[in-house]
Length: 115
Image (cartoon, rainbow, N blue to C red; front, top):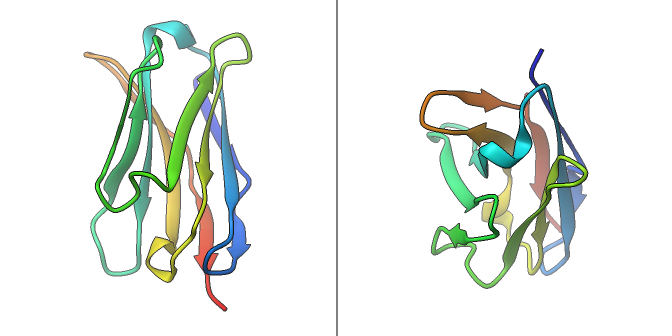
């Protein structure tokens, strides 16, 4: 059974930092790209950051320079370090593992940024 479990969400202040983690089981982790998505109330889910098994990363413009995606292939985990948080970062954050044939999602973790 494939499982992706997010942790580390919660509340943060503008300018602050939070770290999200995603623990992956049930797949050969090294054969999947991994990504973080988010969905704000009333908005579509959007891709935030992506990293492949070799460490190649990409980000959407609104988080580039503030968020860092990383992964640990030995632990089957990947992470999203969020800094200089803004209220517009408030959303449910989902982790995803995918390849050409399969896509797996976590259940999401709430991140709320407010003063």
